Length: 206
Image (cartoon, rainbow, N blue to C red; front, top):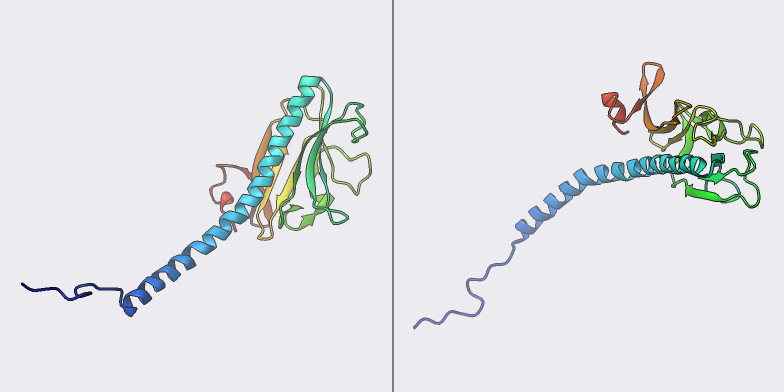
């Protein structure tokens, strides 16, 4: 009777096989990492724009429910604090947040996301339309929803990342205050805004 020797017939990985596996893993990483970073950047910009749209819809519903104006505004970064989007119930109708008026919601701007319109209009000047802030022209314009849910002045809040992608949250028309997310695309020398699903190439990301 033949007795098998201990360990005989067992086979491990050779050095060449392990190198091949490592090389394949490196190739997969090189392929997937750029796509992952693009997805993360896209998520930040889409996230703040979609959250702003939700915040504006909540403000509009609040204005109808309580028959009182509501305001959505951008608070620019200052004093070490990040910028934010916030909405409040404007009980006294002065377009200002005063003591006793409830803040409905607040969303901070993610790192790397700015209040910006194309090609490089940053800060208060990036807001299109809407109502002037009563605290002065240095403040971004504000979205004011009337007691019936209509918008006082048409406009859009615009956001951008550091790679030249721009999204806006637009409110129009005045009566129904439709809130829509749109992305900008450079066509010739002009920037054109497209809703999701429109413009074909417009919703490709840099």
